[in-house]
Image 1: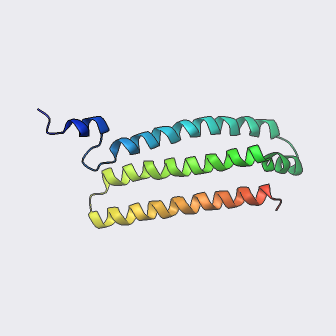
Image 2: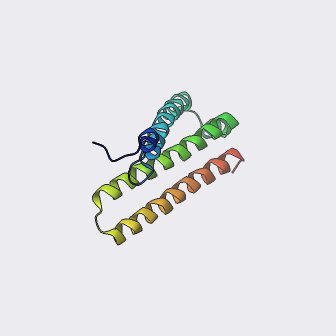
Length: 126
């Protein structure tokens, strides 16, 4: 016999109240990454062997810059969610767990901002 209320069953929330949300964010970012990486692979195959200026012009097009930016954001979010699960499952000391979760978030922000900076610099002609 379950101790959960019918509302809790419908929402699909566990004791932390965010399990289903985390699960879906991870799946949605995985699908987004799959689509965007396939797109990036096609673009990279097309520009393979091209000179520097051609590659720069290709990657600086708005549709390409936007897609690469979306890929970086999605990949960073997916990375953060995955590492969060690993940290929560395998680090048992509470203080160390909180420190690593904060470090995970800061590292993800640095990676995402650095990537976006590089994309913007390329797009606007560095």
